[in-house]
Image (cartoon, rainbow, N blue to C red; front, side, top):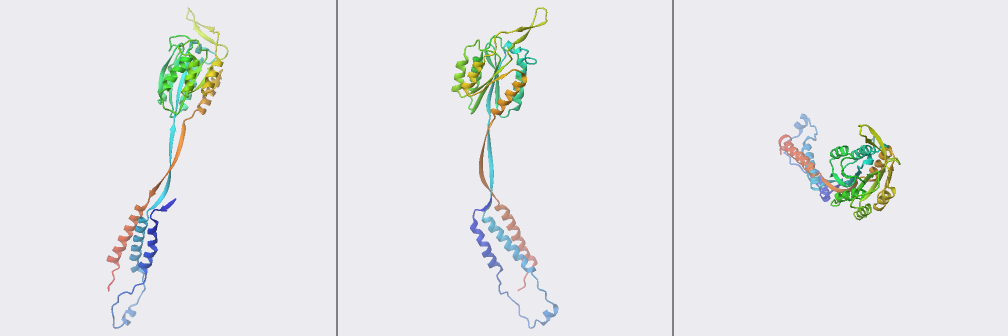
Length: 323
């Protein structure tokens, strides 16, 4: 879109055109006879009018500059609002079960690293839990650091045995508590049931609901939990563990907080689950349109001055009139 802010100056151009090029009675020198001039030959020329055209254009361009030509420019301001994501990962001994290859924990770590790679503009942190829970790495935008941290996680990182799901949620909530981010989520990955911890899952999920933190719960493992155990001779034997996943607890946690429960019985399904969470929880982008006017008067000023100066130079130095 193009406009003239002081458009009324444009009306001066046709008025100036009429006044500037109207026929004037020119001064003349009296001769006794024009016969000699006719014999010399006479050729009508318009060269003497060139300087007038230049001067007219120069003044016209300056009038256009005074009219303030402007073009409307549309701009967009994009604001991206990231998501705060706390990964709460079970590192209890049962996560070494070999129903995933090489085991549940290693498969989960691989999928989590892939999930982190796909994110952008989101702060991501990691909480690990077994018989208790603690923050392995706080919320950060340094994805290389957190991926490296995830890679180094093992079942030996928490000394206390058991599965404290309530603590795993509570510690994650504590990290999210002081954040002003619009969207906060916890992704809880576990293969067991809550059997220890100072904070119950019910208390933790109620607190999450109050804080408006969605919890996605991911139950991993098949119905068989088989872990490798080193015997007295240094060999490896396999032990079956009774008890397993409390799906009802995980479903309730997800439902109460507005999240979703998933069950992964192999690595492929686990990857599919994290891919879905990745699609569901994307950074929010707000696009705001605003308009501004770009000024073009300075171009016309330069053009006007150039033509005006050229016209004056032609008039005074080249096409000199003799009265």
